[in-house]
Every structure is written in C-alpha cells, then in structure tokens.
Amino acid sequence: MIEVMRNAQFKVQLANNHIVIAYLSGKLYKNNIKVLEGDSVKLELSPYDLTAGRITWRTK
Image (cartoon, rainbow, N blue to C red):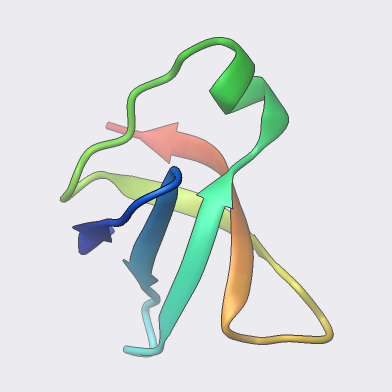
C-alpha cells in the first residue's frame, strides 16, 4: 500500500507496478482492523474496472 486517502480508500501498488484504488472489505471494517502505509495486503479486483479493488486481508 502506498497511500491512505479519504473515505477509507487506499492507493495500492500491485506487483506489476499498476496502481489501484481500493477500499476495505466488510470484515476488516467491522472488526476495526487498521491498515497502514507500507502494509502488504490481498486484493480482489473488479473484472469490470481494473483500477478498483477491495482489500480482503492485511499481512504483517
């Protein structure tokens, strides 16, 4: 993750250097899991818009 934006959105850089705007999944948001800059995360990408995704897991 490279940047925290407003409204619980994040800029995430993928392994192939593409940048995606992502938001937290329901379980991360509900359980108040903190995601900070520099954390590595797992994403689900939208098949319709490859610049949008959802963060489903935070790794340490």
